[in-house]
Length: 274
Image (cartoon, rainbow, N blue to C red; front, top):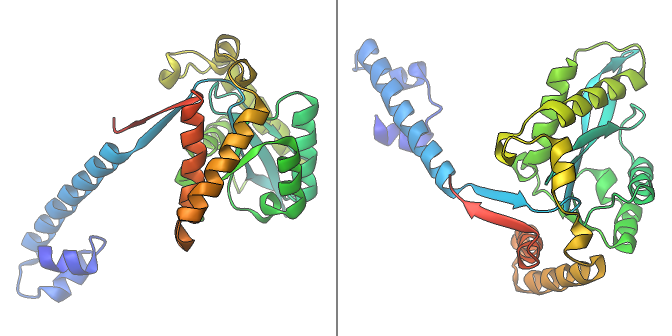
């Protein structure tokens, strides 16, 4: 049975294995398959745990994540909210007008962050077209904000915002099937939930402190580094890494350059395994 699973994969079910091994009694085959799948899952979990990279961000405003999420329907049209989260403090909030994200709205969000003095050193997003727009990229360069893209189809590269969205939507009881009274309702309900979490959820990974407490305790990024110096260092590191990368490795090289520079400036701490 092991050679078969090694060839066609461990997703094979009882019926498939019954066709491959017609002479094996069904009960014996089923029990053996359960054991082999459990052992494989345990090995995989152990491997992932040993190789998982943990990133601790040491100051507020160093790394901010952003993503859109579907919060329900209004008049049979999807309602969207834009969620932001500071990784160091876990402080999160929702914004937007309920419509699908466009590059114009991204620019408006960036302007709002700038006006409130909240522009981060590094902004992490997925590969949505609104984030990759020329004018958005131009605005980020002008503001000297490093853009950290996830690798395509790899949401685990931006786990902080995925977790924050999940927590907020669960508390707000929002999902793809919810019918809303207005577009603003979906955004407001999500933001209200996130503010509740900010003020009341003690984060085990942060010593049991809430986001509100961490906002008061942690240093601000500009107490540790200048934006101009950090931006120039990242740009130089990326340029060098891309020159050494080969085609498909460019995204990985770029991401690694950003994280290494963050480490060099003492802004994050990376560890591997549990």
